[in-house]
Image (tube, rainbow, N blue to C red; front, side):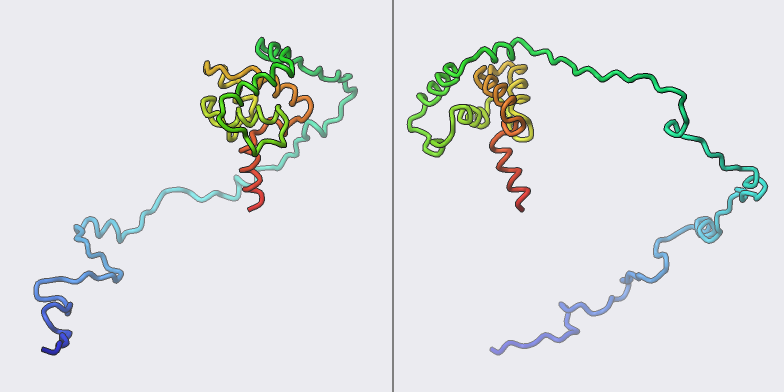
Length: 199
């Protein structure tokens, strides 16, 4: 049997509204039922008893120039003493970390490497200090390394009682004197920052 076309006026088609069914009007009319008092309140404008400013008040106002503190001449300026550089007091752990020798750092790294099953091929070109710092970066037990300097991360881990290795602090304190800010940021943080800057 051939298929037949439905006419637009069939029962499934959507003709206009049937009897008893109203349509929604989007004209500028309110379709919501409102009481007569509400209509009066909407139609009458709200007036207030605020008086406009008069010219007499504005004429009395004057603009006065007040000299700034820099503009005021001074007779003699007292001799300014140079500010003293504050002495940074080091904690006991930092003093202990300064006593850590390179041999202790090397033995710490050998103990870490001995726990591995295979040597780290991708770190062959790095010195021991950079290997120690990168291992500290990826050690998740000391908290996140992104967005915080290595030395702050080490101190935070110490405050939380996580016992971070003193050798890492020793490497950081030595590197702080030599490399400055480069040693402060985690290697992962440097990688992510370079990706953001390149994009």
